[in-house]
Length: 359
Image 1: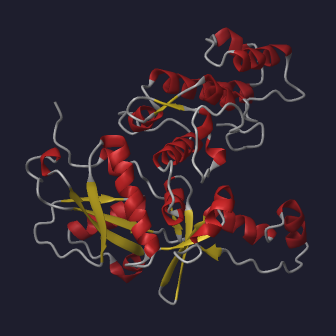
Image 2 (image 1 turned 45 degrees about the vertical axis):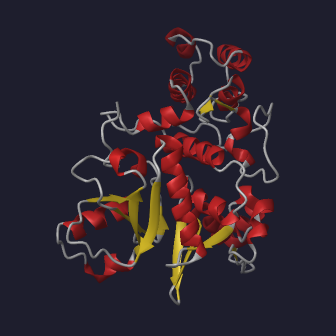
Image 3 (image 1 turned 90 degrees about the vertical axis):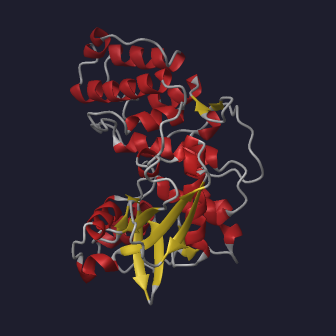
């Protein structure tokens, strides 16, 4: 998506048709602009669609012509209004036209899908692959995870779910596996947390103050709620730790929310299973690593060092699994790239499960 305007997050201001409990987190997700259907899934509203036409990429700028301004005003008034190719062409600016085409195509997906969950799933089932900008895919995961966690009291689980839509930067020190928000780490690295002023200081090669992000744990979990939308806490992913357990629980909830399938996910230190049948990588690196291990390829110590965790997943109802796999566990892997970045792909758990055909 061409960026004639500066990228910004979804504007979540406006009517709030969904009531929220004590902990109202991730207000930048757009959750308050949506409604739920009988299944508890999210349904699109005009206010949610309108927020996309308020994005800087499609908002008029000083050089916009009258046709663009008129189209933008019409879409704010009725965000479902049909837009012809002729109306788009009248905008004149190729970048602006491309931006409108992308947003309108996304709008079409949203209004034709039964729910946002349905829209999200269909993205990964199309033969031509994903054509939607990654930003929009992450925003869908963001708001769906927010809905899934409505009423959550466990801050560690909410922090773990940030991994569903925000890349993490992982560091391993003295055996501790620490995951911090990659964008936040980059901001502090370049500005010291002082925004544009900090960037100017950095460019002048003046030392910035050291900023240490807080590790959220069972003892201090309450610090998370007031800063949930800042994405500036760190999660410990050590084996048998509370952070990794929280990730397991939100992965289970993700499968249940989309597929109505109950699963149990637990970390394991190794796969000792002569009847290993099925596996799923929770990210690109994890998928490649499991494929190679399954095929007996020597992956080397370097790649194994980037393996953050293995998991064993079992189905509560074996009848939902394909007959030739029923009763057998599914193994999962989480691994970081050479750069230390971890980009979870929660869709893998939805589209790669060996489920039986449902009537």
